[in-house]
Length: 216
Image (tube, rainbow, N blue to C red; front, side, top):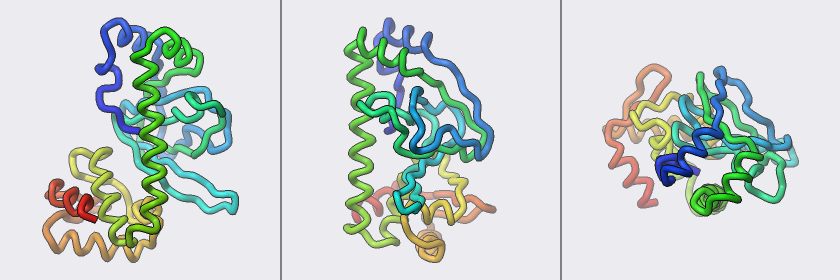
């Protein structure tokens, strides 16, 4: 889902056309961008702030999938796929904004530029691969291992290392309990990898955290 330099990856002609087609959208803290099940007509590229993606099962269980930060893309599955229904709910975690492309603009850009089409399909493929990996991790990794891996991944959305999420949100991302998150973060703090700063956790050694996540 993360495509660094989405616009910069294009040639000057395509870059100009994409920028011309984009429009800025502002979101307040806790504002829902769209709900699962709605018809999707817009693809979003995060410009500022953070968003959390949730899916809701047929039984009503709510699962947090990922936190998105600047440079991330969302809404692509409904806009690029054969079905236009939103597959998840996206909510702004803080004051945020996106650069949006409407379906008509996306279709036109894909039809007239093989580079744009290729890049958007790469985004879609990355999303499917991420969801598949998350499902595999539920059986392959223990809950504490999932916490370590998710916190490492959160550095993509919070490159400063200061992760502004409460333990309940991290627990939802890991499909575990707050108690497990608290215990696992406590071990990482004891190892000098992170510290608590108010309601935020601050990663002091990103390389050590990512290495520990990759080794699981």
